[in-house]
Length: 433
Image (cartoon, rainbow, N blue to C red; front, side, top):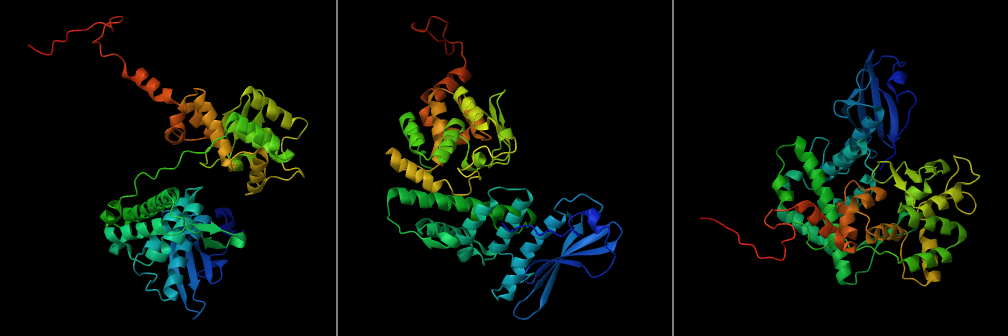
């Protein structure tokens, strides 16, 4: 997602109160030809405005964004902070740029799928969504080239079903160095078909959410068009790969010294790679035997209860170190970065003579081990940081055949038609007179 621009004179209401009242806005450049302005009208009253300049003709377009949070708290609806004004302005910049490019869009023109997506992701950004960036990349690649310029009012079920089939039968993208992407070769295997259909379903879900978001404000949109589209069936995620105890021990032993520590931590906590690499020494609490995860994928902090082995492991890693030190650092003392785990993991799997597995398989290994040892699914979900047991049950429920039986027996209770100790006897039931 686009980064927020900072301006010491506009960032806060206090800073803006020192500006002189004037008609000409105080402009901040967001990108080439795009700017956000603050117009100081009077004490405690200011508004935001966006400006776009066509690089080819030099023509300018403006849009009023709303009131500034000078006297009222920002709500991202009628009153906006500087950061929220930038988010709203970016949607205007997209529309204005497309209009300048002559693609039949105008600032006040048709409300297209591209605009609906832009507004949807802007709303998710305001709410602090952690997955918006990844979802946006997917829709940019799979939705915009086909449906981006289509007015939402002209969407039909047939058009959306054709698009969905196209996504499911198109090659997956692969990412190369420098942000370059290419298309993978398609083998036509059952697993590949399942994966592409699963991806198509996921992108359809994002597109539907964007269109439903638009329909809340625009009552004239054909909601039946996208609500009637059925996703592909029987394409649920394959059961995750997890390591046996023997494979886990061999992997740890085959890892390089600093990566061995990271692998051990993953196997003992089930934490994600990013969660582990952000840990500081102070996040381990030896007295309670817990590990504090302050920043997670869901945005909710959690405490991981450690086993005795886990407590001993982290106590050893923290011994003699300052509270602000990186808990699981690389050999030279720096923190592990994005994707730094991929190559060491592949090398360790090969050296350990076990089937290839990615680092996330260590999280699956932790969860699978708990489930197979009778830990209830709600407890496993809490350890992993899931809000409900749905995800845990989907991935690991098959490992706990007693879970369904125990749940049914605990919840069904007795009907009162069989006397205790009389289960082996035949009872005569009077069903009526």
